[in-house]
Image 1 (cartoon, rainbow, N blue to C red):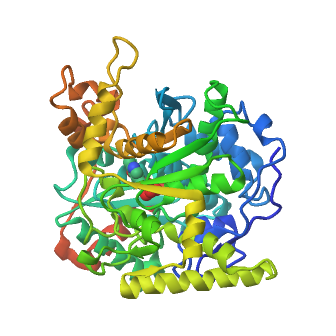
Image 2: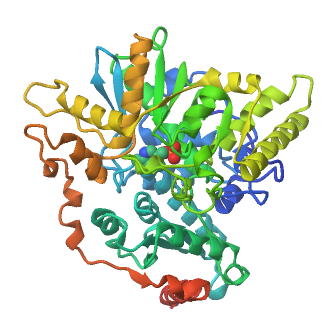
Image 3: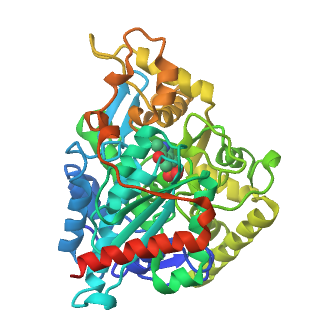
Amino acid sequence: MASHTPSQRYLSTRGGSYGLSFEEVVLKGLAPDNGLFIPQVIPTLPLNWQKDWLNLSFEELAFQIFSLYISPAEIPSAALKDIIHKSYATFRVPSVTPTVTLDSDRKIHLLELFHGPTFAFKDVALQFLGNLFEYFLVRRNEGKTGKDREHLTVVGATSGDTGSAAIYGLRGKKDVSVFIMYPTGKVSPVQEAQMTTVTDENVHCLSVDGTFDDCQDFVKALFADPLTNTTMKLAAVNSINWARILAQITYYFASYFSLIRSGILNPSTSDIRFVVPTGNFGDVLAGYFAKRMGLPMSKLIIATNENDILHRFWKTGAYEKSAVHGAAAEGGLVEDGVEAHTEGVKETLSPAMDILVSSNFERLLWFIAYDVYGSDTMAVEDKTQAAGLKVKEWQASLNTKGGFSVEKRVLDAAKADFASERVSDAETAATIRDVYRWPSTPGSKGYILDPHSAISVTAALRSAKETPGVDNVALSTAHPAKFSHAVEMALEKEEGFQFKDVLPLEFVGLEDLPKRLTHVQKSSGLDGIRKIIVDKVEKELNRTNV
Ligand SMILES: *Cc1c(COP(=O)(O)O)cnc(C)c1O
């Protein structure tokens, strides 16, 4: 049984808030001092976890893990189980996140995270977050009517990839509206259709006649606007929300147990690495929590594309926005940091990893600073304070000078748990082609990777070459149909390859379904966008409150 931390509390990485509840942290998203929320203690696993958890389903595993971070006094067990069930019943396979073996000789496995409603890994977290929002609001609104009811208005901007995961996470949720802005004509037809064919009344797609940055500016202006904030309770679902990290811890355990059950991994003799295609550091950070909790793995491998700030950090100890681009705005506040700052970012074949800085990296820095700058003789509160001060100092330097360097002992601590690999576009395409050509079961076609998964597989192959005998689990973050451009480019010359063979049934005819969207003129400004949102929320409320 899970040994409950009696009351897990949360604090900010910049030292400004502490003692917060899980609910406060989830609804706030970002701390008032601009820091990120982290749990006060990383829980350890219960005594017989390896035996007791071996045969649990994904949902049961999620329940055991979440129970270590959420006090039952905050969400009673039955309610938590219900939230988890609702979140993962939307996945197309019973195991939710299956692990398949790509190459048994080289011990390369793939943890498939794309079986959710929008065919990308963000569903694992956003399905859960949407249900949490609803649970908290419904509970706060019990017995309230009309104007007394709390209503949450989620606003975000997307360049195409992740807007749909947010929409599918929040569609039909009580007391929540969602507004997603995207640049007209600049997202692919499938991406647009994935968003605009969701016709639930609380979902609003705003097609803005501008660029992604214009959408982003609208969102920032709304969050900073006192008038908006007095009339509405705004929320964001960006990848810095703690609940998203928490949700992602489960699949590291699920994959580990799956490899043991299939006889591939021997828990007493084998070694395992997880290789994670990384942008904003949310996915791999969940792996770090799993490792700190006690899941055996020798390393987490961070695989970046050509936007390689993390890879450069692990090589040199300097965390710097690349010099050629100069200082760009710090992102992270609005939607996914992944999409929160396009200026100075290189466009690659793996757009969901195109970042200038990685917002969740701050959380890792805090844990490292806690260990490095806090001595054993210090009280926990003093260590906590020392870590917060150090993080604040690093972030200030990032904002004003575009970067910072850490001491060798900090870098050494980072290297103890992580290694890094950088993968170019050319290598990404080559891996998609190579893996497609690998002999799989006779008569069947080769495995088709999406470009993000091709990055983790490329890094896993390097790691397998350097250290043979270790099982490498590459995280596969999207279905190939979502990134048709890269896949077609890599495979167009392959005999027998037809893109339509990759297309899931859910995508066929999607573009012809009824759509629901509102066109917004960039020139309408803050007043214009505020009016659109206020009117739509009001209409929604009038309809539900009659
Ligand atoms: C968001 C995303 C990533 C990067 O994940 P982070 O948590 O931001 O590091 C990788 N692949 C795909 C397909 C994504 O959508």
